[in-house]
Amino acid sequence: MTSDKHTTHFGYQEVPVTEKASRVADVFHSVASRYDVMNDLMSFGIHRVWKRLTIERAGVRPGHNVLDIAGGTGDLTFRFSRLVGPRGRVVLADINESMLRVGRDKLIDRGVGGNVEYVQANAETLPFPDNSFDCITIAFGLRNVTDQNAALRSMTRVLKPGGRLLVLEFSKPRSALLNRAYDEYSFRLLPRMGECVAGDADSYRYLAESIRMHPDQETLKGMMETAGLERVEYTNLTGGIVALHRGIKL
Ligand SMILES: C[S@@+](CC[C@H](N)C(=O)[O-])C[C@H]1O[C@@H](n2cnc3c(N)ncnc32)[C@H](O)[C@@H]1O
Image 1: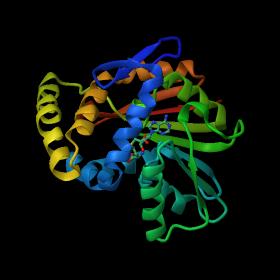
Image 2: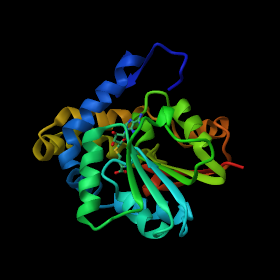
Image 3: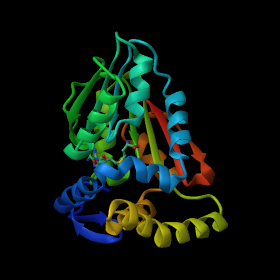
């Protein structure tokens, strides 16, 4: 999670910092073509509700510049492209070319046109000038980034003053009972579903493990503040299984 360590976690495994990005890349190359189907199955479609709330809290208006980093198959980008209109711009960016290709094909099939750009980029070192975007979203992406603090700093740098960063991510369930049920589901059922639908149990085991290793609500709030964001607040969704954090660059 920090830049001064030589190892980091890949799920429950301790791996050299230099290895995590390629391990994560293997996961998303492997699941890209079945990613959307698995998302609906795994979350019983609830990820759509979490994403709708993210859009509502983003406050995006016509003419805005939006960055959807780790945007994958483009669910948020699709909605933002409607909101910013022809005078605005949405950048769908992802480190992984397989995810980006699936996302671009899907958006083109849905008739999304001239206001979306596709950029292969690492959240830790964003290739955009300072103060470029009115809003940045990272949905279910931060957990996969090797140096999360560097990514938060980089996103803050490219936000315009007054701009908002929204982080939608798995988090820590609020009740012990929910936690137990969620553990059963994640470690027993998820890898089997991954095997059946995407032919890949390991990637979905990584998903379950990476969620458990991700900072909890308060820790992430503190990390966003350290990166320079202000008025950081979060909302627990589905009992804290997911949390939506929002911060503003003043
Ligand atoms: C679980 S998917 C989320 C996709 C999409 N945002 C959504 O909510 O459906 C995580 C995405 O993060 C991307 N990713 C992982 N590490 C990244 C990094 N360092 N920079 C940018 N994207 C990254 C992966 O390639 C993958 O597409």
